[in-house]
Image (cartoon, rainbow, N blue to C red; front, top):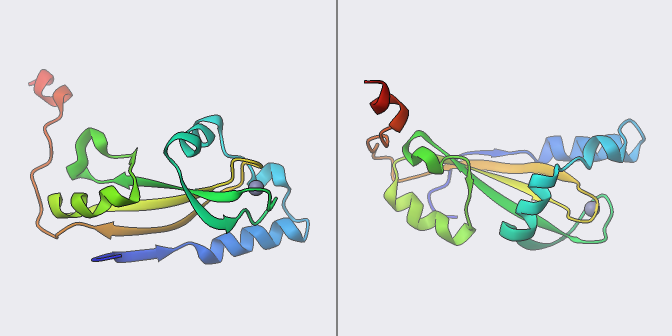
Length: 135
Ligand SMILES: [Zn+2]
């Protein structure tokens, strides 16, 4: 993707988690622990991939994309569709994207990667209502 920076690939942790599972050092209860909220989010906002779940192989993995950043204000921590990221990157100086994979069959979930997007020009943070109310 265009202008991705500070990319963190969690592939190594993901592999070691899966290896622990397959050699019996971890149970599916340990690693397939997506909570109901995450599973619901995957159902309604997730983007299906063509990769089968590495644990149960019964369903394709769903990607959920979360965005975090001071500039995003109340929208920090929300889920965004991949197609929404490019316009967001033009509107904001910097925000971090986290992509989580989820299996809706067995509740496997793992962070896959994160990266920073934005045009690098810092914007003013949105005002916080609570602070205004305190003043
Ligand atoms: Zn699965």
